[in-house]
Image (cartoon, rainbow, N blue to C red; front, side):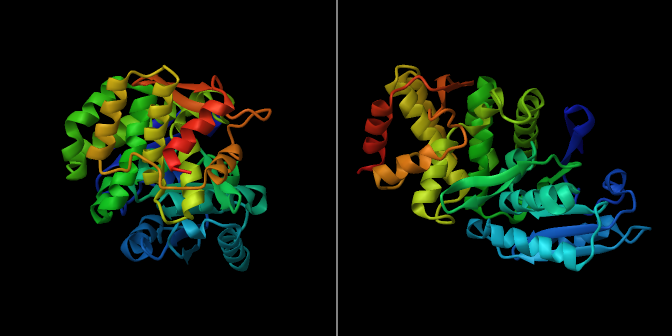
Amino acid sequence: MMSITVDLDERSYPIYIGSGLLGRQGLLDPHLAGRDAFIVTNTTVGPLYLERLVGMIGPRGRGRIGSIVLPDGEAHKTMATTQAILDALVGGRFARDCVVLALGGGVVGDITGFAAAIYQRGVDFIQVPTTLLAQVDSSVGGKTGINHPGGKNLVGAFHQPLCVVADSDSLRTLPDRELSAGLAEVLKAALIADAGFFQWIEAHAADLLGRQPAALHHAIRRSCEIKAGVVAEDEREHGRRALLNLGHSFGHAIELCAGYGQWLHGEAVGAGMGMAARFSQRLGWLPAAEVARITRLLEGLRLPVKPPAADMDAFLGAMAMDKKVLAGQLRLILLPAIGQGRVTAEFTMRELQDFVRAEVGS
């Protein structure tokens, strides 16, 4: 097991990464302190790992353990699902000193963290991510939230976990499509901050797709190191943390226009990074050879490189609701070079409109 610290002063916490962590006795002891625990999972993950997580928590002098099993999928990342969690906490009379644990992928982690942030004005929670995307990205950094019909993740809160437990063994049961979706976030970390890591991914794409443990451990560790460093500098996204949204402004529009659940989040981010690379080239930032490298690697990781057909106005309307819009100006994360992300508004609306029209075909 390795441990990475997200350094946020009194809110600092460890990310535990390794094999066989789900079920490891004593690992969660420092974070539970005999309190009641409530586990949120879904119909896919619960049958695989819920009993194992319960075994980690008790019964050795612990308080009560409750749980709720949610339906699976992005379509359920809603206020109604959040209400179901809150109802279960209230119905079980869980007090303000309870700990809520998120067992699942990014959707479970986001919803659980949001419920924990607002229940009794905030209770502690722990992230136990079981997908690659959640292990390398969404479980780290304290962003929690739900979708709104008008846009992705428009309702939420910053609420840091007590710890993150990333058991790489859970990736053995991950569908191939979900694995590739997670690799999109690994690639994103390399593109914004580490050209050497990008080269490593190029060299080890087959190992990652083949679920070689050493390759997966390195990818998870380096991705978490990059994100932890960015979050420590800018916890609430006033500046540099926006870099972590490379591909997301385009990707969130893809998800909304296609209908939540039709594209996996990582697939939409993959296509969004392809769009960001091509828009960077159109603005004269990124050389064509670098765009070609990014495209080849996206394809090599079995990710889409282009968006589906969509109505241009609807696509741009979704982008206009992006959380990086400031004073009416959309900011994008673009690439002057591989490993060097930049937050910028240095483009005209006409340039963006012409680009999106060419990309989505209407």
